[in-house]
Image (tube, rainbow, N blue to C red; front, side):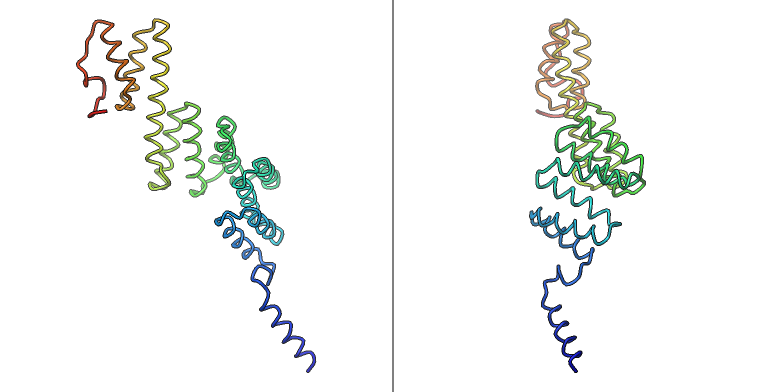
Length: 242
């Protein structure tokens, strides 16, 4: 009879405990971590993700989300340490390389991000990982002025998932950024007396971004100075008003 009472009391107590502590379940801890992360409670999220990983050291996602929460919190050095530890423990898992690349993008270190992301896409055929890595390669390529590589990476994202994030806008952004880069190059070499080459760069810039007003103006001015006076609005690849 006494044993029955003890069992009954134990069961009652367990039912009264908060869900997070009712059982040291990695899936529960991970779910609680994601909830805390979404709410912006990053310290709490880190604690839950760490508990999930302790309960199941094969749950690499939990370890990665520790780093994600540290990154969201702004403690990027801690996040970098976490991702590097993951790479040491699981060198054949692409996710840590992918997140380390993303971390470097957040820091503005595009040259450091690029090799991590290229390693990611070389390691996996998982489309969920590939589309994020290629999207990030599009960002690094654009910022490193590797515009063809950026477009190629973003086109691969579209091939995997046409509606992923703002991929179409990002491709258009690459064109705009390259057009501005060409305009700046044209302006620079024009001061060095390279008028014909500057004109060619301006034509490419306008073809990429027909709304680049400064490129249009400089193109018209340069053509006039070379003895060819174009009619306003008839510069290369012109499509509509500014």
